[in-house]
Image 1 (cartoon, protein in one colour):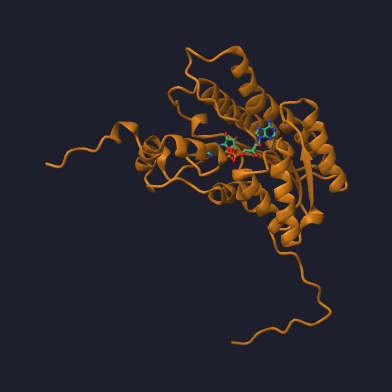
Image 2: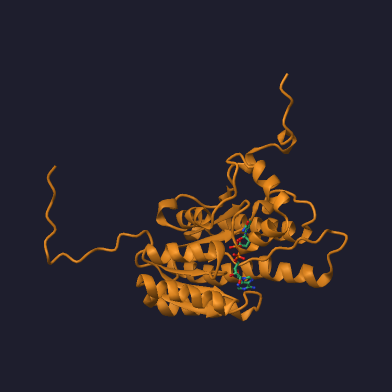
Length: 279
Ligand SMILES: NC(=O)c1ccc[n+]([C@@H]2O[C@H](COP(=O)([O-])OP(=O)(O)OC[C@H]3O[C@@H](n4cnc5c(N)ncnc54)[C@H](O)[C@@H]3O)[C@@H](O)[C@H]2O)c1
């Protein structure tokens, strides 16, 4: 096999899908958001990483320093439910990107496992403020920049609770259905303006949000894994892989997609989760 020699004066070209791009990630400090941020930095992006937890962002910063990409990372500690946070994040991104913002990962979200007969106004409002209002507000703030520059991509993190009913989780299910609705509404409104909008719907994934459940209720966890066709829960990197694909140019013709990343669980009709006796 012959190899083309690389001459010394040739400078290495960044080859990552996100080389030269500017991205915003919310909920970047742990779990799937951290995996997305690590992937973005590894693939060459300049990243504005938001989280409400300062320690989690500090740990992300230490990682970035270790791998030599700290100069492309800006951490912003803020609660996405505070209305001003959207403008703060978009301004930080356009400052870092000389006016550009190429990709938004609207990822921060909270769970709510309170049955419908028990959920109070305060919990309902908090879930909607983080999972719905903040997602809409940041998508619009980022979308304004993307429309002006003639293109961009937005990825919203929904859930399997965005496409299915789960018992005992009214607030979570309603909020994630709204995330799917925001995704489809913006995809059709902004498609003609060059902005793509997609969503991932993670199934059971091993992150901080779900680890507590695994610890406190291992039987429930095992039962959930047992009905996943791939017979296991997912990893943050496996969710990040789909998110990074959808916001990259590899997905240039993909918009309005609501992608269930759940080991095949959505494909199974629940009536068949009870094994049929063999005769
Ligand atoms: N892990 C799963 O099984 C699973 C399944 C479906 C959907 N999701 C979705 O994934 C997203 C995050 O989950 P994860 O699994 O990465 O969880 P995680 O708990 O590991 O990470 C969530 C991060 O978001 C941050 N955060 C929470 N509220 C915030 C706020 N108001 N402002 C800014 N940051 C905030 C947290 O500090 C944390 O670092 C959520 O939207 C969740 O609904 C997760």
